[in-house]
Length: 440
Image 1: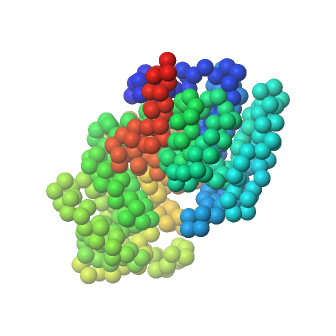
Image 2: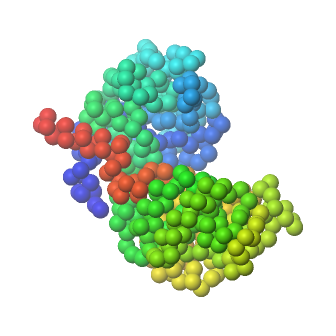
Image 3: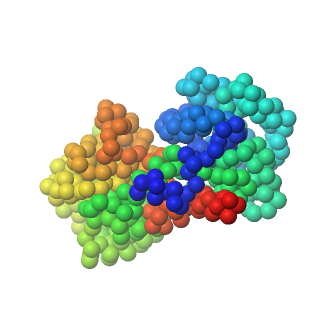
């Protein structure tokens, strides 16, 4: 999929007139944990869009969500340093040698930010006069209305945002939920897809419509939350490797064993997958797993390797917390990896940080297939790759056969829907393009 194909469906930033315009940019800089940046990867991936805006004479106002400051039960919004964008702004100021300013807003102790104040308009004046390089709004989820159901507060926040800028750019692929800052705002002002958004959608084509054979590696800590994406991936893939609770539930369902920590409902749900695979035989089993007596750590004498060939119906096992690296020396496993033309990974194979050898061996073994197009989901998958294989990660950053998505959950949602164009945030941009066409 090329950019000209995208332009037929989406309004692209390269088509926008930004000269002298204030540009509201939604990014996914949700990288702050306990007041510090865990990994700046998502920030760095949006810099191309920011450079383009400034180069074309635009003046950027950035916004992102951080964490979950809103209590889903009570609706109370807690605006604390743990979910502040300040660490992001400090990083940008150091990285770009420009001043991004966070305007001050009055904060209601229960409802968060409910109105604009003079501070933001003063900052916009300085932005237009080029006294500052940009504005960074507080955490979008600090604003009442961002995550509200349709109604006054949601509509009010959309109007508040539209009052700040002339143009909107969505570069937050990882923020696929239809909130005000990713969805409603497109109903009000001209809107465009940023370069990162375009890049992620184009690379999604490698998973949705892949070169075959395709190997997918999927893991998860809860079976029920991954059923939809798992079945969608199963239908698209030629071979599937499972990890974590997904694999443990599958093993219990297929071999009639019990594994500590695996719920009966997960095993019951996995039985359908086992039944499907009897006919299609897509699941590539990892023949050696690591059993542990405890989840507290890798304690000498309390963990061991188990072989699937030794499983017998009725057997009971402790916690299975990793794939033994020698699974990747198995001839059948190696053959599938060697022959794959596309490899999609959204998985941490072990219970980190103590059980990490399986994930490390997975990444290193997949890299031996130099010709396959390898796509990694975001979040924990990417973080573990960087932590466990730092040299490999640095060596493949510019490798055209590797791509690292910024939003793993978004990728799974798009795969389940069969297209990135089904995502609400993307649909909103498409509808805006149609509106702009009608106005002209």
